Image (cartoon, rainbow, N blue to C red; front, side, top):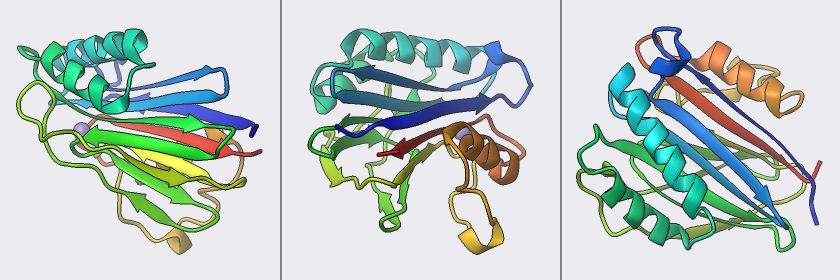
Length: 195
Ligand SMILES: [Mn+2]
């Protein structure tokens, strides 16, 4: 079974932690690991409330099938300002990570190879396509990064030397510090696999 190192970091536009619409969640259980990154629409108190609602739902449903979780979350968020989210379940015995999601959350793998994981567009609580589940194999040494659209998605690694160095906390902090946009909440989840 592979060991993991992970860290979630978020920063609100206003600076207040209770005004951030971005949030993340990691739940390690048995040989599995559930990960989620959420960006509630807009920012401020309303977005924060939708993010909290999402996190609460995920905390009590994380063991379900990923597409079932998204469908349930979509219903749960009706009447809120809505959110985009990506969710993953990593099996540390088989090295397979299942993932699904709706909307603008970026997921990238570095290490063994560079790969972007694609999810469908939509907004949870408003309109979502029928959720799809996909999977990818992880290799020891891989670095998996989830980020909200408050962080620049397209960048050249050569322009940011050292951004993937250190532990998960160092990497997530570097992403927030170096790739953060000016006008949105920002969040980043980093997982180092097989450390
Ligand atoms: Mn955003």
